[in-house]
View 1 (cartoon, rainbow, N blue to C red):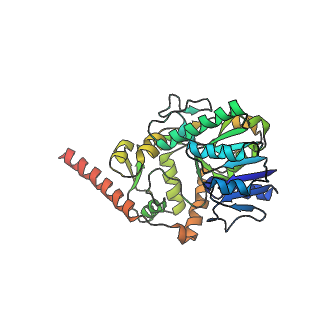
View 2: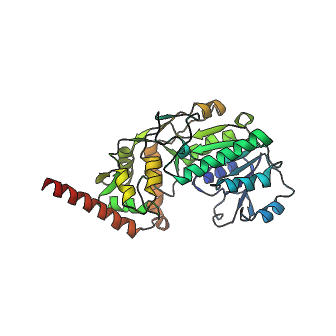
Length: 338
């Protein structure tokens, strides 16, 4: 198989790149080259900015592919560019959308690919929906061989998956745990969530590559494991070897008192219970099964981050904000009690 990935070094795509390299796939990554130092042997790089359409068109002029996958498209204009570049040059074009595009709030917590797409809380999700609509139109009217993939919360060894964190990543929450400081959990922590290790996601994605039954289809790829946010934070604390000091705060309050996009990221995503039905994926890829249990994956992630200080990016602004929120809640409770 000959494949081209636009991106190829992110959380989701890096595991796919690694597994395909082991399988002997003729794999090309089209990116700017800023994160290519640790690429597996045999992976070829087409170094360019995908937004420089004229240059990219020249670089791939004599090339064609079995699969082209875009991991870094977020708005329809980027898919329009991809259509111009790859129409007639690939047997399958795979677009990475988002499970946050599903109906929010849900009328039924069990999510299938037939669940309506609607998210009034998050522009990111609405843009992904618009991207999907454009590609389906090209499939129906022009025969563009599209497969749409919707990941949910996917993680790797470089970042601890969390609900509430700052713009600089999630390490500051881990540090608060290590220092026995109060850690904010949105809502009451009992809503259900699904997290998927990127190595498991890769197995499903690779099974869809070159799969004629996936053309014109939309498929989500997630673990079948459901956990509450309380369990998630307890798992992280356990991996750090500390006792969790949790403070529960309503998602609406967090969105109202922060400059972070908690309206989108919480109200439009993580504050809602989600349980994914992966029957369609398993019909298309019968061998698929997610085998990394969350507590196992988190232990590996935490161990990796603790062993790599460069991944421990501090966020003093977020840390101070957490203290303010906790103090405000304590003061409000004391005022009400008199």
